[in-house]
Every structure is written in C-alpha cells, then in structure tokens.
Length: 554
Image (cartoon, rainbow, N blue to C red; front, side, top):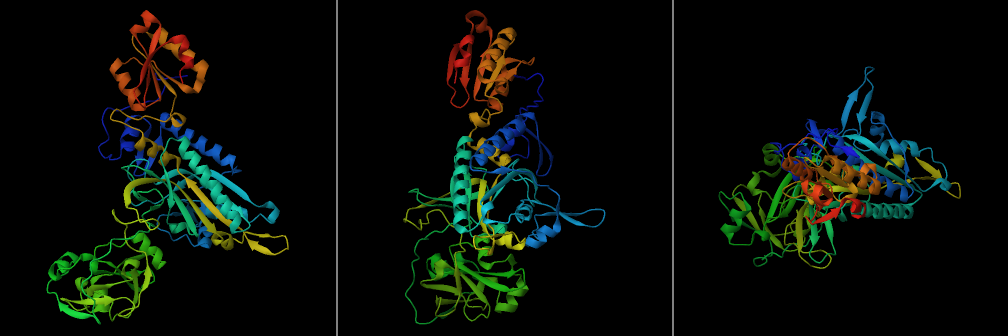
C-alpha cells in the first residue's frame, strides 16, 4: 500500500488564478501536476499513476488488435519532414545541432514509421500495425487549460500498413472498435464523428469527441442520433431564406453608408439570409480569392482552407480596393475577374450582393447566371440547422478531442518509397492509416465529465488508487488493519492509506479532492464496533462494514 505520509502530495485549498477549466483547477489543487512553463507540465506521482493507467488500457486494446509496440526517437532529421512536405508547418519545432544539421521535434511520427516500413518487401508481410507511446512537441501558439492544450505531451500513435484500400478499411475499423473500448473503459462518453484531416492528409478521418464545457472543438449532433460531426466538416441544411420577387437581371440600388448585413437588410426590408457576404482572402501563393456565404452565415476558416487547398489570410484594404474598386462593405461577385468560392447555400435563389461600387448594392444576383463560382461547404454550422440525413435539428456542444484516426492512403509511402511486391511481382505502394490518442488529454476529459464541487470522482479503471483509507486520530492501528485487509483482497497497488498527522476535516477534503472510487473512514466508532464507514465517491452512498468483511466490498 502507499502511505500518504510518504507520498509527494502537495494539495492546495484554492484554485490557481489562471485556471478556467475544471480539470486544470482540480489537477493542480489535487497535487497531480505542476506547471514548468506555458503548455509544459510535470506529472507528480499521483498524476503519473493516472496517466499510466490510461496508457495501460490503451496498450491492452492495441495489443488485442495485433499492434506491435516499439519506440521511435523524438529528435528527427528535418530531411524526413522535407520529404513528406510537412517541414514548413509552423507548429513544428525546428533546431540545428553544432554541425548546423537541421532537425525537427515531431508532433507525430508518420515520417519515421514510414521510413521503417520501407523495409517491408512482400505482400506476405502485410498487414502490419505498429505503435508507440512517444513524446511529442508542438509549437502551440496559445497553450492553455492545463492538459488540454500542451506544447509537450505523450501520445499513442499507431500506424497500419496494408496492401490495398480494402485492407486499410479493415485496419481502420479495427482501430475504431479498439478506440470505443478504450474510452468506455476510461469512463468517457465520446462520439465517433466525421472530422477534418488537416495537416495529416488522407481521404477520411474520424474524431472521438468527449462533451465538456472546456472543450475547444464543437460537436454537431442530430437530435435523432443518426448524424454527428466535428463542425470543422459538419454538413447541415440551413433554414430557407425569404426571398423578394425574382428579377430578370441584377438591379443596382443605392445604399449610402451601409457596410453591414444587418444595416443592408434593415434598409431594404429583407431577410438577412437573402443577402450574400463577401470575404476576399489571399492564398499562400499570393492568389486573391473571393469567398462568399449567405449574409446570415459566417465563413468557417478550416472549411475554407480545405476548399482552397491552401492556407490563407484576409485581404488588406489596398488589395481589396485594387481588385474590386470599392471598399469592404460593398463587395460582390458580379463582374470580378478572379476565382469565386461560394458556399453551397448560395447555389439556388437570388441574393442581394455588393455592387463593387461604394454605397451601392445589386438586387437579384443569381449564381450561374450572373457569376460562375466554384461551390463548396464553407459555412459555420449553427444551432437550429437541419440534419443532412434526416432533417432533424442539429445541436452544438463543446467537446474535447481525445482521439483521431486517419486513412492516409499512399501519401507517405510514396514519399518514402515504401513499397511491396504483390503475388504477380508488381511493385505497389503500401497503403497506410494512422491513429492517435493523448493520455494526458484523455485524463483531463475524464475529469471534465467526472467531478463535483468537492473534487474529482475517478472511474475505477483510471483512478490513482481504488481505495483511500482515512485513518482518524486515535484509530491508527485499526486503520492499518483495514488497509491490510483491503490489500489482501485487491493488491498492494490498490490502496492509499492517509496516515498523515492532519485534522479529520483536512483528510476528508483531500479524499474528496483526489477522488478515489472508495473512501474507508476509520475513526472512534471503529474502536467500539470494529466497523468502518465505506463511501462511494461517485454517488455518495455510504455503508457500515466490519473490518474483516472489507475484502468483499466491490
């Protein structure tokens, strides 16, 4: 058993001043973690126990699907990332050694694992699943919320290597099932939803989102339960606009001083959804593109970047004036000689748009007739939108991304010449998938879903200890006996005995804060009847149990 008197357990009474997320507050107060720098944390003994219990669950489930554990280095030659085309990603830490050789500190290990996969030669060696628990670095611009957004963290990333897309589909589904089991065992409510692949690339990906108030992702769920997606890729059917009478051709209308959708709709007495909103952006190659959404919508930056196939920035006033001949409040798609990327909601109907002339707009602007855009889903999903599958109402809620799985295809294998010979002797690229889980972020998400005003209420499989024995003054011998019985039933590693020289109230407060599933209180009543109080942390249920029978308590 572990004695609290010997454990490094620096609990605090007050929340840290910069903490907003419940998990951040409780992990610091409970003595689980301490901050070293922005987004850089040390796991103290209690926190490391929880982290490693999550690691143990992940390892068991990965091994169950045939995963082979290994370990790749953190320090990685930059040339590997240059081959994959990911070296320029701004979140990647870059450094040079004393010989001026370039290295990166990776945020994932696709390049390194694919380098090793190049040693596979025959279809007889496939499929393969390799994984490791590797330290990752990310030059995060806004680290915050304790363990939710970090600059350094440990991640389980696994990689599947198959001969074709059908094999990848099987590996992908095996990982999906394993992930569902992992999060169930961790006591997490999660949703497996469509997601954006982002810098990882590939043809398909799924997010595992845990609903939580501190979450930085937005989860869109159909009220009928048949659709869910991260809002970065979520599809939705917006409410239908109330259009004014259709026109045979666009008509100019003077709109002096009007530069917002609200002012435009008010002046013309129309539904804001019957207007269009222009967003000129500049791609990384310097190309100016006009993004266009309905007036009551907002552009989703991630969707827009995916549709552009490039990073972008908003065009500045000079670039806008040069391209459109007007300022920001009067821009539209008619008559401009540049690429127009319009949201799908603008495909049908006539909208009011800017006339590219200060103080003027156009009525009756129709896509296809008056301008020729490329259509894509670039709008933000909003509460009240309808499900694209059944028409049910979509609801939005914040969530924490605790896992992400990707179908990479041959992007990395082609870059690293990772090929195999099939049955006919033809050389083919290995088809890959990658699959990530962050134990630290999972730990934070568990707390977000399992806490109250007093502290954490850990689910049994991830708790630092299964039982917290609180020995009160005068009952020290009986407390040791209770701990001995529990150890005999559950093992040395399952019991924390609070034998510190503290007041009863302090010990109870720490027990609630730390959040072990069972609290066993040994006090003065024990001296009289030989029994102890057993309290379940999750629901507060209490019972009186004789010490010899403690081993039967579940």
